[in-house]
Amino acid sequence: MSNLDKFQNNGGIVLLDTKQLKTLLHIKGDATLWRYLKDGIIPQPRLIVSRSKRLWALDEVLSYLSKNKGGEI
Image 1 (spheres, one colour):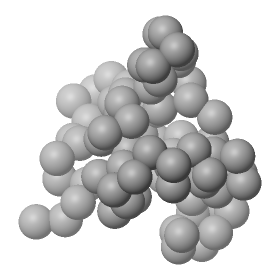
Image 2 (tube, rainbow, N blue to C red):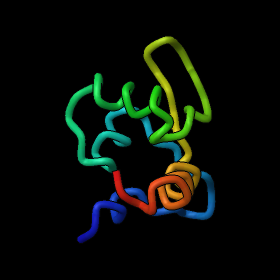
Image 3 (cartoon, helix red, strand yellow):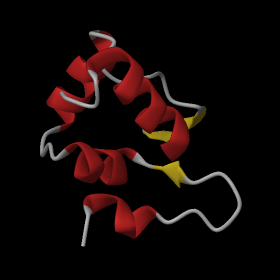
Image 4 (cartoon, rainbow, N blue to C red):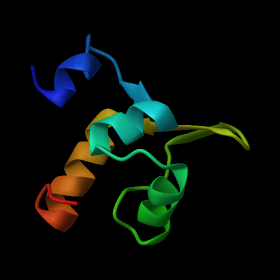
């Protein structure tokens, strides 16, 4: 089972919160996630609900990673 199997698209936009994005990227710490964001390794969140709740679109993250880093982090 690949890491993406957990985030299957059912015809709509799949949004990931920070915990799900860290799982997808195989990272554990929040500091690493925010460093990736600051360094442009991952795209800006699609939706900011509150100061502590940010959401990324799965398809945007995957296309951003494949364009900018060849899918590698």
